[in-house]
Image (cartoon, rainbow, N blue to C red):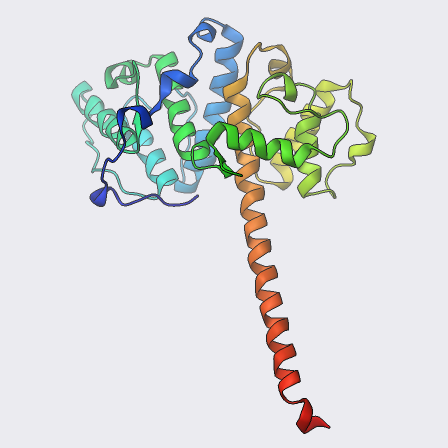
Amino acid sequence: MDQLENTSHYDNGYGQDEYMTQEDEWDRDLLLDPAWEKQQRKTFTAWCNSHLRKAGTQIENIEEDFRNGLKLMLLLEVISGERLPKPDRGKMRFHKIANVNKALEFITSKGVKLVSIGAEEIVDGNVKMTLGMIWTIILRFAIQDISVEETSAKEGLLLWCQRKTAPYRNVNVQNFHVSWKDGLALCALIHRHRPDLIDYAKLNKDDHLGNLNLAFDIAEKYLDIPKMLDAEDLVSTARPDEAIMTYVSCFYHAFAGAEQVYRSLTCLCLCKIIYEINHVTKHLPSIF
């Protein structure tokens, strides 16, 4: 992941209208849906652990393990490539609040306007506020910087998915909920970049659970993308947008990075070929 600017040189040049607002992306009507909450817990926990494992740790319970702020600060350091202020190591409540505040201040310094999320709620283990905070982090560090054909963030990710899956039958990506529930869009994304992993022609468009589980298993085994979703929950949850966006963004970063390396190697090879041709051409008179 690209490293962001150093905090010691940070200049908050964001105007009020330019801030990312967490509440704009967080559908409050879904907060009472147990299936929605279960899906977010699984997805966000897996996403956090995919980064925390780089620092040799992980979380088990998303609302409990961030309460003292230590792993939250570590997560932000891993995904940003920056150092946060030294955490308080005390075990008192005010130490925990101080650490969480350091994390929240770092998030807001990156142009995120946190809404209704305070350190006290995180320290108290408020699951909905914790999920909202993690979604804000995902938006800022995994989705906001995606740029495709002059579109960015959520729209850029959607456009990337549309471009990659356009040639595939029975796939019509229009959103981050219904378009993904039959599993074909995920299988198409994998096949587009790694056709050796999936025989797309043999997929059954009516086998939603089978297609989803196939994509999840292949992504985990061959692409190092952890399983963040349950097929049954994905099919039954009314609007799993945040979970799907989080998961699909992992494919974008995995494949876009590989494509960049491929383009760089291709350019290097072409330059070498051109150099060799010029070298041979230059010495043709002496050869003959």
